[in-house]
Image 1 (cartoon, rainbow, N blue to C red):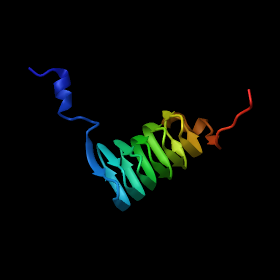
Image 2: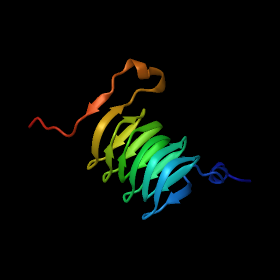
Image 3: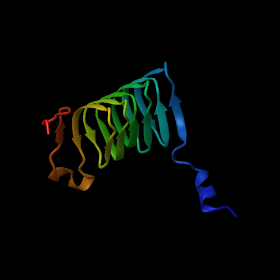
Image 4: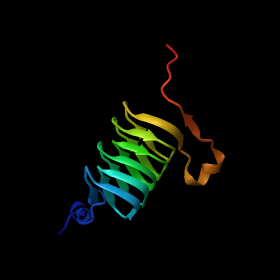
Length: 138
């Protein structure tokens, strides 16, 4: 008899379905289900309910609509994520982020605005303007 863990391994949601390696370039619209990792250059639009993993060598100029975005590279454009956005320490993000959960590690360069309203309360909140790091000297 299969254990519950063994059954779930058959359809692993984090299994990478496609990979655009370092040195690849793509222009256009990428639509997929599951998880995709990008380490090359992409220009256009990325649409998924799944996960987008942006590697350290990636350079992306795109509008992104995803379930989850994990970014360690350069991303210029707007991100709308229904689950979460995780900016890793070497990430460079320029543009707006709309997600209910945002994780920003130390070392990230983020220039843009962030809105963390849930879908049902989006009209009740105002976006937070991110300008950069400021210190008050205390």
